[in-house]
Length: 305
Ligand SMILES: [Zn+2]
Image (cartoon, rainbow, N blue to C red; front, side, top):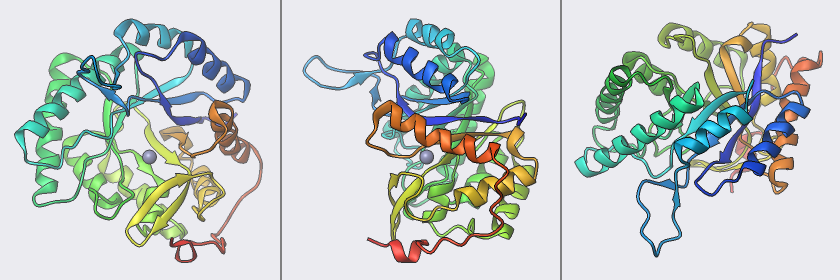
């Protein structure tokens, strides 16, 4: 048996998500031998005025219900995209802090492994702003006894904070996890098309990230990219992301037990489509197939739009 946590990311969980939908996803995962999910609060707001179409976070009672429904499944959560921590604006940082508190509270009920989020644009002093913010958040986490570990995501756009090396270094200094999105890494021109590049990254993870009983979330998908990096996510087979090669190296290095593999493909097929894409990850790992080098002819240079 492989020691692997695999499932999909980006399942929206809001105040309006009903029990039946959650049950459908949970049984869909089990039926396909999948055992992980990243619930996304990406569209959730803290305050919604009566005229707006905004969505509220799920309630703590809904989170408790979800915890039971997803029994036996490793849960991660994803914060809203509107949250920015690379900025020095105190208003932006206050709002981000309020979002983190909400995510930590829900994460505690869900016993979520990690909290994925994007740091924001790379602007002046981005690195020190991110570091200061994360240090504060880690202190709050400690003081309040929250269990979920922050995981800043490797950004896909070259103008966003930040690439793999920087994110790992910052997270290492702060004592949190990272979320390694391999489509983002690839779209930025990260060297994950070469074995040396992947091994170097595993080495950096080992050197910098303290796992503290958690697993490192990894997002896997296809991608549409431009010169500026990621444009959007796509099905696994699109854009030349070396995902089978990447998984082969992880399996060979006995690294599967340290990570959660979360398929973040964009498909048209709704929940069923998401489950099918995620299933190809587990099927590949269960097969004896080994991809020993990257030979995709649709490599990124040919895929600029
Ligand atoms: Zn991602």
